[in-house]
Image 1 (cartoon, rainbow, N blue to C red):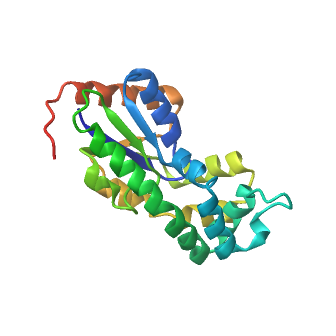
Image 2 (cartoon, rainbow, N blue to C red; image 1 turned 45 degrees about the horizontal axis):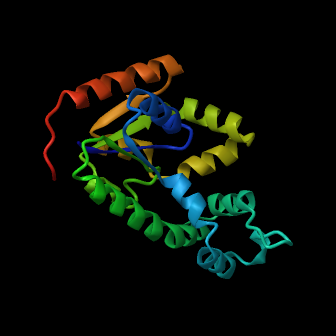
Amino acid sequence: MPAIGITGGISTGKSTFVDGLRKLVPVAIFFNADEAAHAFLNRPEVEKQIRREFGGQVFSSAGDLNRTKLRAIVFADATKKRALEQILHPRIRRQWRTEAKEHRNSPKFFFADIPLLYETGGESLCDRVVVVACSENVQLARLRKRMSISSAEAKQMISSQMPLEEKIRRADHVVWNNGDRTSLMEQAQFLVASWQGQRWTKK
Protein backbone atom coordinates (compact mmCIF):
# COMPACT_ATOMS: atom_id res chain seq x y z
CA MET A 1 0.00 0.00 0.00
CA PRO A 2 1.12 3.58 -0.58
CA ALA A 3 2.94 6.16 1.50
CA ILE A 4 0.91 9.37 1.32
CA GLY A 5 2.29 12.69 2.52
CA ILE A 6 -0.07 15.26 4.05
CA THR A 7 1.03 18.89 4.22
CA GLY A 8 -0.33 22.42 4.01
CA GLY A 9 0.10 25.79 5.67
CA ILE A 10 -0.35 26.90 9.24
CA SER A 11 -4.07 26.95 10.14
CA THR A 12 -5.24 25.60 6.77
CA GLY A 13 -6.83 22.56 8.46
CA LYS A 14 -4.24 19.84 7.93
CA SER A 15 -4.59 18.37 11.42
CA THR A 16 -8.39 18.24 11.11
CA PHE A 17 -8.04 16.47 7.76
CA VAL A 18 -5.63 13.92 9.26
CA ASP A 19 -8.04 13.33 12.17
CA GLY A 20 -10.65 12.52 9.55
CA LEU A 21 -8.32 10.03 7.86
CA ARG A 22 -7.74 8.32 11.21
CA LYS A 23 -11.48 7.71 11.50
CA LEU A 24 -11.86 6.63 7.87
CA VAL A 25 -8.81 4.33 7.82
CA PRO A 26 -8.30 3.27 11.46
CA VAL A 27 -5.85 0.50 10.55
CA ALA A 28 -3.51 2.88 8.69
CA ILE A 29 -0.09 3.83 10.05
CA PHE A 30 0.42 7.52 10.82
CA PHE A 31 3.62 9.50 11.26
CA ASN A 32 3.29 12.97 12.81
CA ALA A 33 6.29 15.27 12.39
CA ASP A 34 5.12 17.71 15.08
CA GLU A 35 4.86 14.90 17.61
CA ALA A 36 8.33 13.70 16.62
CA ALA A 37 9.71 17.23 17.06
CA HIS A 38 8.04 17.48 20.48
CA ALA A 39 9.71 14.23 21.55
CA PHE A 40 13.13 15.31 20.24
CA LEU A 41 12.92 18.57 22.20
CA ASN A 42 12.95 16.48 25.40
CA ARG A 43 16.24 14.82 24.56
CA PRO A 44 19.29 16.07 26.48
CA GLU A 45 21.49 16.36 23.40
CA VAL A 46 18.86 18.50 21.64
CA GLU A 47 18.33 20.71 24.69
CA LYS A 48 22.10 21.22 24.82
CA GLN A 49 22.17 22.40 21.20
CA ILE A 50 19.20 24.72 21.78
CA ARG A 51 20.85 26.23 24.84
CA ARG A 52 24.02 26.83 22.84
CA GLU A 53 22.09 28.47 19.98
CA PHE A 54 19.39 30.38 21.86
CA GLY A 55 20.88 30.85 25.32
CA GLY A 56 19.26 30.41 28.71
CA GLN A 57 16.39 32.78 27.90
CA VAL A 58 14.31 29.93 26.49
CA PHE A 59 14.67 27.84 29.64
CA SER A 60 12.94 28.24 32.99
CA SER A 61 14.84 28.61 36.26
CA ALA A 62 14.22 24.89 36.77
CA GLY A 63 15.92 24.15 33.45
CA ASP A 64 12.79 23.28 31.46
CA LEU A 65 12.48 24.42 27.86
CA ASN A 66 9.93 27.19 27.37
CA ARG A 67 8.44 26.11 24.05
CA THR A 68 6.17 29.15 23.79
CA LYS A 69 9.12 31.53 24.08
CA LEU A 70 11.16 29.46 21.63
CA ARG A 71 8.31 29.49 19.10
CA ALA A 72 7.94 33.26 19.40
CA ILE A 73 11.65 33.74 18.71
CA VAL A 74 11.80 31.54 15.61
CA PHE A 75 8.70 33.03 14.02
CA ALA A 76 10.10 36.53 14.49
CA ASP A 77 13.63 35.77 13.30
CA ALA A 78 14.29 33.82 10.10
CA THR A 79 17.90 33.13 11.09
CA LYS A 80 16.83 31.60 14.41
CA LYS A 81 14.12 29.63 12.63
CA ARG A 82 16.72 28.09 10.32
CA ALA A 83 18.94 27.35 13.32
CA LEU A 84 16.17 25.40 15.06
CA GLU A 85 15.32 23.58 11.83
CA GLN A 86 18.95 22.52 11.47
CA ILE A 87 18.76 21.00 14.94
CA LEU A 88 15.44 19.20 14.53
CA HIS A 89 14.88 18.45 10.86
CA PRO A 90 17.71 15.95 10.26
CA ARG A 91 16.47 13.91 13.22
CA ILE A 92 12.82 14.05 12.11
CA ARG A 93 13.79 13.22 8.54
CA ARG A 94 15.80 10.15 9.63
CA GLN A 95 12.91 8.87 11.72
CA TRP A 96 10.30 9.45 9.02
CA ARG A 97 12.45 7.93 6.27
CA THR A 98 13.10 4.85 8.40
CA GLU A 99 9.41 4.34 9.11
CA ALA A 100 8.44 4.95 5.47
CA LYS A 101 10.98 2.43 4.20
CA GLU A 102 9.97 -0.15 6.80
CA HIS A 103 6.37 0.28 5.68
CA ARG A 104 7.05 -0.59 2.05
CA ASN A 105 6.02 -4.23 2.50
CA SER A 106 3.03 -3.46 4.73
CA PRO A 107 -0.54 -4.01 3.50
CA LYS A 108 -1.62 -0.83 5.32
CA PHE A 109 -1.76 2.79 4.20
CA PHE A 110 1.05 4.94 5.58
CA PHE A 111 0.17 8.61 6.11
CA ALA A 112 2.94 11.09 6.89
CA ASP A 113 1.69 14.32 8.48
CA ILE A 114 4.60 16.68 7.78
CA PRO A 115 4.13 20.49 7.72
CA LEU A 116 7.53 21.01 6.04
CA LEU A 117 7.27 18.08 3.64
CA TYR A 118 8.46 19.94 0.55
CA GLU A 119 11.00 22.04 2.44
CA THR A 120 12.77 18.88 3.65
CA GLY A 121 12.50 16.86 0.43
CA GLY A 122 10.12 14.37 2.04
CA GLU A 123 7.97 14.09 -1.07
CA SER A 124 10.62 11.78 -2.58
CA LEU A 125 9.36 8.98 -0.32
CA CYS A 126 5.66 9.58 -1.05
CA ASP A 127 3.51 7.88 -3.64
CA ARG A 128 1.11 10.82 -3.39
CA VAL A 129 1.13 14.20 -1.66
CA VAL A 130 -2.01 15.92 -0.40
CA VAL A 131 -1.94 19.66 0.30
CA VAL A 132 -4.67 21.01 2.57
CA ALA A 133 -5.21 24.64 1.56
CA CYS A 134 -7.57 27.57 2.01
CA SER A 135 -7.77 31.22 1.00
CA GLU A 136 -5.38 33.72 2.57
CA ASN A 137 -8.19 35.55 4.37
CA VAL A 138 -9.53 32.37 5.92
CA GLN A 139 -6.04 31.23 6.93
CA LEU A 140 -5.32 34.59 8.54
CA ALA A 141 -8.61 34.62 10.48
CA ARG A 142 -8.14 31.06 11.73
CA LEU A 143 -4.58 31.72 12.85
CA ARG A 144 -5.49 34.92 14.68
CA LYS A 145 -8.33 33.18 16.50
CA ARG A 146 -6.26 30.09 17.31
CA MET A 147 -3.28 31.93 18.76
CA SER A 148 -4.91 35.20 19.89
CA ILE A 149 -2.41 37.30 17.96
CA SER A 150 -2.54 40.45 15.85
CA SER A 151 -2.98 40.50 12.10
CA ALA A 152 0.65 41.60 11.67
CA GLU A 153 1.91 38.71 13.79
CA ALA A 154 -0.24 36.22 11.89
CA LYS A 155 0.97 37.51 8.54
CA GLN A 156 4.57 37.20 9.73
CA MET A 157 4.02 33.57 10.74
CA ILE A 158 2.41 32.73 7.39
CA SER A 159 5.12 34.49 5.38
CA SER A 160 7.82 32.53 7.22
CA GLN A 161 6.61 29.35 5.46
CA MET A 162 6.88 28.20 1.86
CA PRO A 163 4.10 29.96 -0.10
CA LEU A 164 0.94 27.90 -0.12
CA GLU A 165 0.61 28.50 -3.87
CA GLU A 166 3.92 26.67 -4.39
CA LYS A 167 2.75 23.69 -2.37
CA ILE A 168 -0.51 23.60 -4.33
CA ARG A 169 1.42 23.65 -7.60
CA ARG A 170 3.50 20.65 -6.55
CA ALA A 171 0.69 18.57 -4.98
CA ASP A 172 -0.91 15.43 -6.38
CA HIS A 173 -4.16 16.27 -4.59
CA VAL A 174 -5.43 19.57 -3.18
CA VAL A 175 -8.05 19.60 -0.44
CA TRP A 176 -9.72 23.01 -0.33
CA ASN A 177 -10.74 23.89 3.20
CA ASN A 178 -12.59 27.21 3.10
CA GLY A 179 -15.76 25.59 4.41
CA ASP A 180 -16.80 23.51 7.39
CA ARG A 181 -15.65 20.17 8.75
CA THR A 182 -18.37 18.31 6.84
CA SER A 183 -17.01 19.54 3.50
CA LEU A 184 -13.48 18.60 4.56
CA MET A 185 -14.53 15.08 5.52
CA GLU A 186 -16.38 14.61 2.23
CA GLN A 187 -13.14 15.34 0.40
CA ALA A 188 -11.27 12.92 2.67
CA GLN A 189 -13.82 10.19 1.92
CA PHE A 190 -13.50 10.80 -1.82
CA LEU A 191 -9.69 10.52 -1.70
CA VAL A 192 -9.68 7.40 0.46
CA ALA A 193 -12.15 5.70 -1.87
CA SER A 194 -10.03 6.59 -4.90
CA TRP A 195 -6.83 5.33 -3.24
CA GLN A 196 -8.47 2.10 -2.13
CA GLY A 197 -9.59 1.48 -5.69
CA GLN A 198 -6.08 1.80 -7.14
CA ARG A 199 -3.41 -0.78 -7.71
CA TRP A 200 -0.14 0.47 -6.23
CA THR A 201 3.38 -0.33 -7.26
CA LYS A 202 6.53 0.50 -5.33
CA LYS A 203 8.66 3.45 -6.36
